[in-house]
Each structure stands twice: as C-alpha cells, then as structure tokens.
Image (cartoon, rainbow, N blue to C red):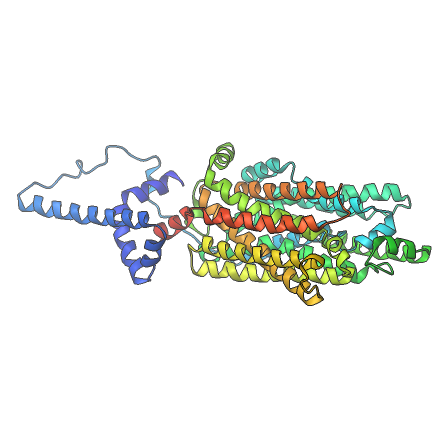
Length: 531
C-alpha cells in the first residue's frame, strides 16, 4: 500500500468506518462480515464509538466555554511525504481490453497444456512409430514438471519486469520446443532426442503460464470478477491437455489391438502402417507448431503488463519485495498448510491423467475410449470450476467451505474409481459407465478446485504478490507430479498403486483444509477502502 493511501486511510478511518457500516447494513453485508471475522466489525464499531465520543467531547467543551483553536494550532505537527498526493483518492477503472488480454493468455495456456499432453493419449501409437518404451512416455510427461526447476527466475522476472516480459520469454520457449519436435529427421534415435528436447522447452513455459493467472486477474479485473478471471486463466491449460485426449486419438491411428501393448507390437508387422502412424503424428506436431507461432506473433504485437489505471484498491497497493515475499511464504504455517492441500492432490492428478491410457489398458479400455474419459473429466472440471468461481465472486468469504465440499467429493470419487478398477477383489461392476462416471466426477472436483485454491492462497498471504504466491504453490504441485512420474519410469508393470496415491492425496488435502483458519485480507481492503 502506498504511503499516500495509508495516510488517507488513517486520517479518515473514524468517519469512513461510520459511513461504511451504514452502507454495509444497507446492502446486507454486515451480517456476512460478522459471521466471517468478528474482529473487523469490532474495529469498525470501535471507530464509530470513538467518532461519536469525540463529537460529544467537542459539544461539552463548547458548552463549558472553551475557546476554539486557531488555524495555526490546527496544523499537523508531522507532515506526510508528498502531501499533495497523499490526500488524493485512489481511482479505479476497468478496461474493455482486459478481455483481449485474458483471451491471449488463455490461448497460450491452452496450447502449452496441449503440447505437454501430446504423447500420453497416443502412447501405443508412439511406441510403434518411434520405438518408444513405456518409460519414455512417462519421461515425456515428466518434462513438464522438470521445466519448473528455474521457477525462481521466472517469478523474479514477473515481479521486476512485469507479466509481458516473463510471458514473451515463455512463449519463445514454446515456439522453440514445438519447432524442435517437428524436425523430420529419418534417424529415430535423433528424432527421439529432438522430441524430448522440445517437451523440455515447452515445460520451461510452465512457471509463467500456470502461475500468472491470479496476477492477471488482479491487475486487470474488478474485485467482483477476479475469481472468474482466475478460473478461466488457470483452467484453460487443463482444457488444452483435455483436447489432446481427443485430437491425438482421432488423428493418429491406433495399432490393431490396444488392449495389450505386447500383442499390438506383435501384430504390427508392416512398414506401411508404421509410416502412416508417423505421418499422422507429424501432422499433429506441425499443427501445434503453427498455432504456437501465431500466438507468439500476437503477444509480441500486443500484450501490456498492466492497464493505465488499476481496477481496484488492491491492484494499486504496494506489495512486498521479492526476497521478503519468499521469506514470508516459507515462514507462514497457514500458507504451507493450504499450499500442501493444493499441491498434493493436483500434482498426483496431473501425473495420473498424463498416463491415464496406461492405467485403463488393463481394464480393456481402448486408446480412443481412454481419451474420451480423460477429455470429459477435464472439461467437466473446467466448466464446473468457472461456475464455482463465479459463485465465489457473488458470495465472498466462502472459499474454505467450497474447498471442503470439493475435496470431500474428490475423496469419494477417487475411492469409487480405485475399487472399480480392482473388480477381481471388490466384485464391483466394472463397466464403461462406471469408469466414465467415476473418472469424470473425480476430474470435476479436483480440477475445479484450482482457482479456488489460488484465490484463498492470495487472500491468506496478502500483500505478497500474486505471481510469487502462485509460483511457489505450482512449483510444489509440479514437484509432486515429478516425483510420481519419476517412480513411474521404474515401475510400469502394474499401476493400481497410482490410483491409491490419488485417493490418499484427496483425503490428505481434506484434512488440511478442515484444520485451516481462513482470512480475507485483500477482500477487506477492497471492501472497506472502496465503500
């Protein structure tokens, strides 16, 4: 918060709180704030009592014949710096161009998610076309979390130079990675190395793409649209990964039998079919490269870091420095609680969905059907997440309750899916309908919780910058994903343990949220200063 804004709030807090209480009662918000944080209402009531007490003292002093003070006696003894600017109110404005900025960022996030999840949905075809092993498919998915290794550099760049500089560097990595994957060299060994390098470069764009959504929403959107904008910017990368479940299997033909990779490898005996699979994969790679290059040109042409006038008081306030922000986050126990509650289930879910085809293969689910299951689970999570974010914008201060309901539902759905896959032991019906339903419900609950987690994290640690806060938690989530996929590269024969990891992660997150004490520092600033 700037010095001028702080001086104005302090010097007018008594009178302002009296007016704010009247307006809050008029709009029916006082009951909500009383139920949310009694301390805030106590402060306001204390200010109102102080105001009317001072008025009473003034009347008594006048009745007793006290002389009024002179103009010089009423001058303050200590002047704030820059008095001309300290008494000016903070103006806010929203611009129509914010939707263009959100659209460009969302399209970039969409493509980054699609490029990352290129190989999981077509893993059977890739194994035969490029002689990949199962462990290679897991490593290709692993490059996404590995790309988060230099996350501190991207967070520093975002904090010091703004969102535009960090985003341009990230999109440059995306273009180079998509181009590297598309080089049509005949040597399969060299081709595999190029594909791995391209996936790593695309992963380097992850720290900005997955962390900058809340920063963009705070910088460009009003308080009653922040959660919705955060949901769109954060979930669209998941939507890109979901579309790869459809684009890949529809454009790339699967081997003759996908229920068993070993059988499929034996059936495919002609070079004609292998060459056809390679050509279709190459078509997908070319198309993704073209779309990423087009978006890079658009961002290079127009993508401002911030609007001329901030949209809210919180957007105009001064934030902590980079080093101070990192120290405060790592020493804040409440932040670590909710960060782990976010990172563990979402990290496990990301690794689990990246190899969903391999998980469903023992259940005799084809590559195309596994793609549709993954697609609808992520799409359902994105749609439900935007709807819940809009609900959170309408009724503020309910983020913890929403997360409790989401994680409880995710725990039940993951248990249902895990037991369904173990039909030989549980004797539960393992049909296409049960697999579809349990997996889609699971994806809806976990994926839709991402923007709600982001908003609660930012409210908890305000005034730490949004980009740094989300950068830390997304790094933790990708660290969990990376550890999971690292173990998967060594143990791919039987994957039922991965389902149990997902169930345990949801239950662990639910326990942490139940013991978490929520606070809404940024919301209070916007409500009480702007009323």
